[in-house]
Image (cartoon, rainbow, N blue to C red; front, side, top):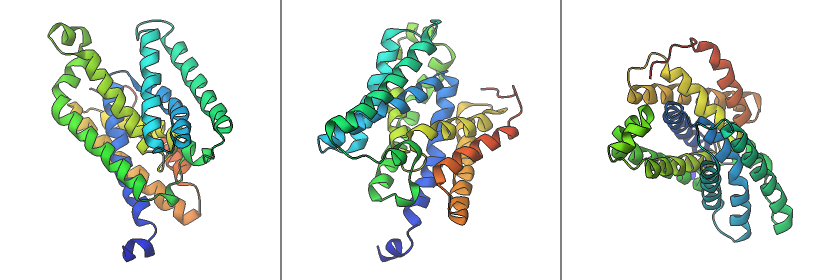
Length: 264
């Protein structure tokens, strides 16, 4: 304990590594399932739940996961992925949810560091933040162990998977729950808004000429850890905010992606 108290960077560093590995792996699955827009939706929907949880004296992450999942389910209920209005409905719900969260904070008389929630505050991360990240990591690993083949099938042919007895709705619900958990657990690292960059860019790098989803996830996680650790190190060196710096490095990394060569 004395080592950790003296070396304040240890917990933030571990969160950086686990988030850097977890988010890109999750993003790889979502890209192959064409559900990445759902991440943007969930990331904006967590704020009302965070506010309600704080007002009720509960763990903020619990409320964030629940409200994020409710937002995703509401979008799925109001439309479907083939509808021309799908993106419009998703964007309307995400904007409305963010607005609701901003209204609830003063109405409930609570104090939330919005900058930390939206953009991360890695250098003040604590044991609770690390524990949430580890729990999310373990749940994602369990999803991959017990649902990998089904995820592959649903990603390639959802109608065929449903016809062959796979409960596609339940699998999508599990995927949505895990996504919400990953987003909320990444609040300390990059915030619920900037997390989209860490979910997307390393996944694009990992998908280039990947022969399987498993290979793509491993490669994406490696890229994610490298980008995250580099951003964390530069933020300390130049006294900058780690979350925004990591997202900027993600954008810069896009030049490494050969267009149209991802094969998964």
